[in-house]
Amino acid sequence: MNKKVIIRTLEKIALYLELQGENSFKVSAFRKAAAALETDERSLSEIEDITAIKGIGKGTAAVIEDLLQNGQSAVLQELEQAVPKGLIPLMKVPGLGGKKLAKLYQELGVTDVDSLLQACEAGQVQALAGFGAKTEEKIKKELMNLGSRAERLPIWQLESVVLEINEVLAKIVEVERFSVAGSFRRTNETSKDVDFIVATTAPEAVREAILSQLVILEIVAAGDTKVSVVLDRDEPVSVDFRLVTLSEYATALHHFTGSKDHNVRMRQLAKAQGKKISEYGVEQPDGTMMTFASEQDFFAHFDLPFIPPTVRESGKELERLEELQQLVQLDDIISDLHLHTTWSDGAHSVAEMGHALIEKGYQYAVITDHSQYLKVANGLTPERLAKQKVEIEQFNAQQLSIRLFRGTEMDILPDATLDFSDEMLHELDFVIASIHSSFTQSQEKIMERLYTAITNPYVHMIAHPTGRIVGQRGGYNPDIPQLIEWAAEHGKILELNANPYRLDLCTEHLQLAMEKNVPIAINTDAHAVEHLRFMDIGVQYAQKVWLKKELIVNTWTLAQFEAWIRRNK
DNA sequence: GCCGTTTTCGGCCCGACTGTTTTCAGTCG
Image 1 (spheres, rainbow, N blue to C red):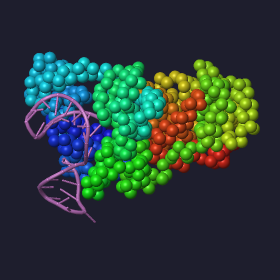
Image 2 (image 1 turned 135 degrees about the vertical axis):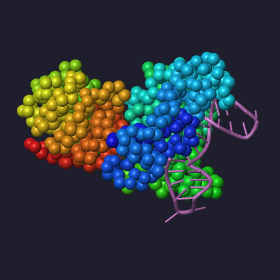
Image 3 (image 1 turned 60 degrees about the vertical axis):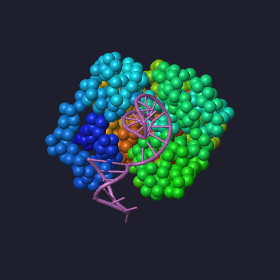
Image 4 (image 1 turned 90 degrees about the vertical axis):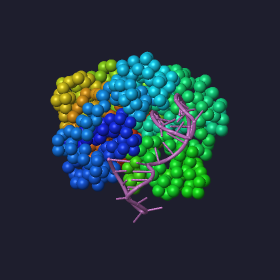
């Protein structure tokens, strides 16, 4: 029995119970049990006494036992009998929750979208106690929209939204401080909406400025403390602004950064000390409200170190405090190993890229333009690669604060051969191999290509190993556990491509790589100097799996890196 | 349904908002 099946089953039971209008604490008990199982690192067979896990008691353990014994859950089957499947998608309709749906089902026989729409049109909904004309109208409107709007937007789409709003807010004089919050601040791959916390003493002026300066499709709410809009972009984006005073700023930022589970943990901690956390501050046992100058101070009030947003997830992070010091920070990064210039499809010259890297404070980097196969990207022939050598050497001779290495991002060809000969590769300091073509080949063929690359003695790293685009395309579906095995065996680096389009390897795969001690390079794959900013996203993404600093190649000293790339020469 | 270094019963994170009410339930983040 797969652990994930058990987790999924517990979550399904919670959903069905909710649809029956069950006691919300009972519902969340099943969700908590699922979450407890998920955050427990051990596999099923390693867990001796399942009820010893906090959050799993008699009832949920019985469900798990049932699943282990019979491969299915009688509890879930019963619920599936009792509750129509068609009600599940209705949980997504804004304004409808378990209680209301239970009532609609029991009193009007609503079982799916169509029957709910009919009930609305017949005016039956507004006749129910607790419902009214406005509710009925709203449900009707939302049912029409159902499915037309993307549920979650990928980080790369939201990044440009956040940058744009940052610019707008920075120019409003009444704004004292502001920051993005929510799951975007936690560097999640996708988010449902974007949250901003804004400190001001003039909420009306800020509200008006925001409403007039953004391109808005719909104003959802515009009060004194909350402005909620939908931006008019290719994909409509929901944005919430929370307007608070400067003294409330730190706790509001913490509150709206979440995650929900992290907040729950923090509040439990506060409660045990007789205190109460809200977005407005921390209420002390004597009833006075305490506020903080920064999130740092807020955590310190509870004797906690600063917990970065990226790891504020399950609440378990509060039990890993000693590991926080080992968490990689942007300052630890002193190199970028995957960069493009005008020699192939980049926007800036070697010198321009070099100066931008110096500006970043890096000590070394590798110029890795595309190889000849990639004609659309103006890939380099051996002749042009030789010419580029001169330019890189010139730069190094003039700029002593950084060392640029000569590299390539070489294509792994569809026939499982490499784009450059071994003699060519031997010439270079650093060789990246990657796949840019024939994504639809069988997994067997894809793995054959990757095997050729990873067993080549001159290849140092595999870039964006899956070829995925976040929220858009799955990539070429390699067997990643196998690839990680090979990387460990042949001493190769795997990439965490920091470009928000890619974030490849993903967190799940990074976790596997870390367990096998495979070195990871966080690279921006910059095609222009502005893209160097993606290092920030890459580092934060790595934090999400608590990726060990010593495994991250770009934290190695120049001497360490040089020794490593030359070890086979 | 789960839990207990004040508890085996009575809580379970907190507050805003909305629409329904006439003091509050349900939903949401």
